[in-house]
Length: 115
Length: 113
Image (cartoon, rainbow over all chains, first blue to last red; front, side, top):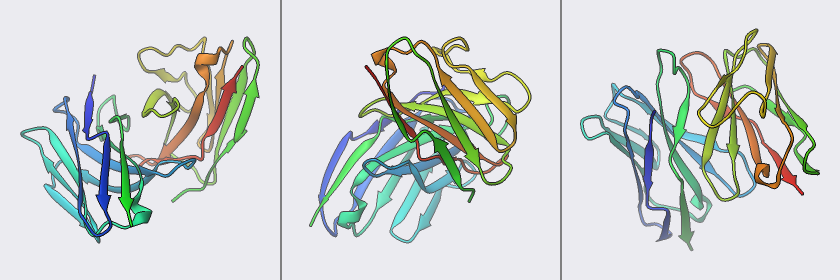
C-alpha cells in the first residue's frame, strides 16, 4: 500500500519568514495530493491540493510543488503569520481504480510562527 | 462544501462497552470514510463506508471491532465495539463527491476508562 513520509516533524519560524514542509510517497499510482491544516481541537481543513498533471499550484501565500519522478511534494508558506501556527498534514491518494478516494496521511508537521 | 455533523462530539465510556458514532451530511455525497486520530498522531483510515453494501476495511481494522453502516448517501455510523483504553482517540468521518476533495466532520473525542 501507499506510504507517506513527512518532514520535518516540527518547524519553528519567525513571523514573515517562509516555511517549507516536504513529503515523499511510495505508490507511483497516486495522483492526488492534498494538504490539510489542523488547529488544536479542530478538524483537519483542506488548504490546497494538487493533481499529478500539474507541477505547481499557488493560492495567495500558499503553494504546493510536485515532482512525480522523485515522488515528492512540498508545501510552501510565505510571509508566515502567527495564525498559520497549526499541525499540517500531507496526504496522497488516487482518483481512480479500486482505491478511489482513499487518502494516506503523513505524520504531520507542527508549525509554530513566533511574532 | 457540505455541512458535516457528528454525534456525539465526545464521550467517556467504560471498557467492554460499545459506542456508535453518527455522521450526517446535509447533501448527498458519493464517498464517506472513517478515520481514527490517536492523541498527537496522524490520521489513519479505518474503512470506506459503502452505500447499500458492506464497508471496505483497511489492514488492521475488522468488521467485528468497527461495524459500519451506510443506509443512504447522507448518513453513516461507526460502532467501536468491546472498547479498551487503546481505543481512546478522535474518530472522524470524511465525505466527498466522486473525483472531488474530501472534507472532514468535526470529530468524536472518545475516552475509554
